[in-house]
Amino acid sequence: MLRPFALHRPASAEEACGLLSRLGEDAVPYAGGTELLLLMKEGLLRPRHLVDVKRIPGLDAIVDGGADVTIGAVVTHRAVERSAAVRARCPVLASVARHVANIRVRNVGTVGGNLAFADPHSDLATLFLALDARVQLASPRGRRELSLDDFVRGPWETARAADELLTSVTLTPWPERTAAAYVKFGVHERPTLGVAVALRLEPAANGAASVAEARLAIGCVDPRPARVPAAEARLRGCPVADLEDSVAEVGARAAASVDPADDLYGSADYKREMVAVFTRRALRAAAARARGVEPVARYQYAVVA
Ligand SMILES: Cc1cc2nc3c(=O)[nH]c(=O)nc-3n(C[C@H](O)[C@H](O)[C@H](O)COP(=O)(O)OP(=O)(O)OC[C@H]3O[C@@H](n4cnc5c(N)ncnc54)[C@H](O)[C@@H]3O)c2cc1C
Image (cartoon, rainbow, N blue to C red):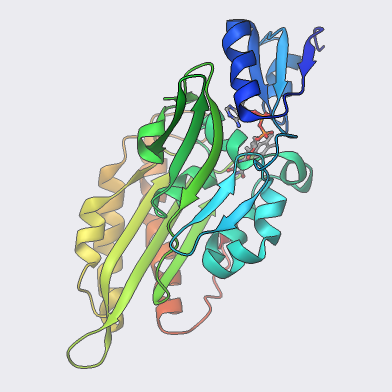
């Protein structure tokens, strides 16, 4: 049952931060409410004031700034999926957004709510690491920007101060000649595992394409998502034609980089094995795209975006 609360509807980020600062521990930001209202119904959170951020002008915008794309905190997953700018600049993100949660959550759940909640089972946080995400925060003390890696500190824990509002997240789209894929696997509502791979390609001396730069991010198995520098190093310089030869080692390096715990999503050993398996699959999907072929990977309980 929901306990009584006061709903505040500030007209600006400054006003929202002022409210959060003045009301202190009794107040929390409220966007789509898909996480917040659940916790309140369960009695796990009992805020007496909700500061509704959905109507704050500008927080619902997606801006293509040329070198980067900025997504306002209250943009919904559905809006991300349908955005022409996201489809053009970060097509894998548009595709991932289509597979977040269910249509009800996608319609009201926001990008800012997803990142601020810092559930370890977040597709966005994992993919955004491979897109060099920076989050923008506003507070009565002014504005600041943090890398997503610095923002997400652990499960349900971020660097956000109680009176700070997440206003937007900025992504650096991969250059045009990039082959990428995001693979998520899960049997529960939320993903058990997410793997993001991006391979920036350039022509080698012999004219054949090779990997100039690689990004690999693993999420949902550890307390926070992380890139895997050892696996990225293995891919750098690899000719596209030889990518298949690297998948086993890249999968092994990714598995060695995680330190999962036993929980309802599976045992630590199982998760580590799944990281190896799905890193190989994500890499094969990206490698297929590098050859101009759309992957036709169909795995049970998994999605290739
Ligand atoms: C059934 C289910 C399935 C899901 N499956 C997936 C999935 O497959 N992949 C995935 O990535 N995610 C998944 N999610 C998570 C989903 O993406 C989030 O629930 C949603 O994006 C949260 O946004 P919201 O606007 O509803 O946040 P709210 O519930 O409104 O808020 C969540 C938290 O963030 C805080 N907050 C909200 N906005 C701000 C802000 N602008 N600044 C500071 N703090 C803020 C709130 O105070 C609260 O603590 C799932 C969720 C559910 C319920």
